[in-house]
Amino acid sequence: MFANVIIAVVKTSVRRRIWILPLCALVALLVVVGVLYQRVDAQAQIDQAQPVDAIIVLGSAVRPSGRASPSLNARIQHGIALYKAGYASHLILTGGLGQYPPTEAEVMRRLAAAAGVPAEAIVLEDTSHSTEEQLTNVKQIMGARGWRSALIVSDPFHLYRADMMARDLGLVAYGSPASNSPTYTAPHLRVWYTTREAIAILWYQATRAFGEPAWLYALLKGKV
Image 1 (tube, rainbow, N blue to C red):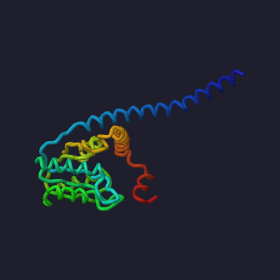
Image 2: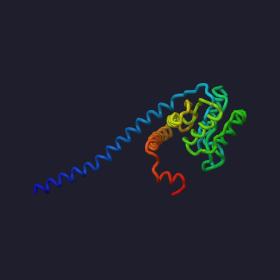
Image 3: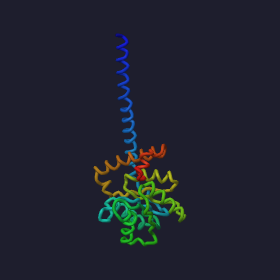
Image 4: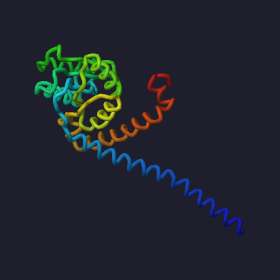
């Protein structure tokens, strides 16, 4: 009888531990995401615009019609405004081919040209498919031209991660948010995209520290 009681107590303790460990992990994850959310939102409200060698405008989605999405339009219009204000003599427009043609960089080039930005002031990076690829390619572009500093233009929620990636690549870059983007001006979109970005930052840091899981790498490369 006594042995049965002990066994029952042990089983109950094990069951509790089985539930407690995942619960603690979930709570810890939510705390980390919450902290990152605050940092992302704080960075989104800071404009570090200052004289630099180039203005990097990060790409975003292109609509089925081939026109810029509201987010992409907000980014390029802000980049054009910074260029015309004299913050830099060149625009680096980034983004490869997404779901719909043309490339994100090409859509922005057309808008910049229509706004009076001369062709010689525009440099395209049109092969990338992620923020990290965009900035990696931009680093090569800047190095080849002897440019040392840049402004990064993107949606406000995106700048914390973009700045983090730029630093990891050794770029001297400052964020300037396209604050009129609907992802920022619409409260529900601001919460959604900021939360998603906090999770993306956590994922970026984890994969940078431990590498991408083999199955995910294969999936992204089209091998699964």
